[in-house]
Length: 131
Image (cartoon, rainbow, N blue to C red; front, side):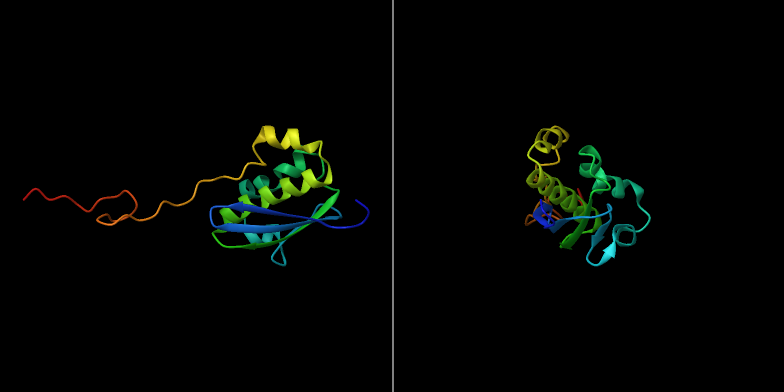
């Protein structure tokens, strides 16, 4: 990787994150803001995003630039994590085993179930009245 950026796409629920890995100091920018400003005061979610970098010991080697769209903050962070993991595998194929064991390369297939007719939501029924 001679001073170029590595791109990868991550997805979760209805969120899509396009991730660019660039040589840097370990900062993450999401939609032009720092990660801390973007997610607010949520250290658990911040740890979730940094997980692939920590596992592969790349916290201070790369800056991450992300364009995230769709879904909520938590789903976007899941998509960012997926994208970072895929980008790291492009950087070095040896990271694949470590990330695969942690389940970071697998796209989380869980999405919201559609509403059914005759129901209030996907599974919730209307209140039953005997009389």
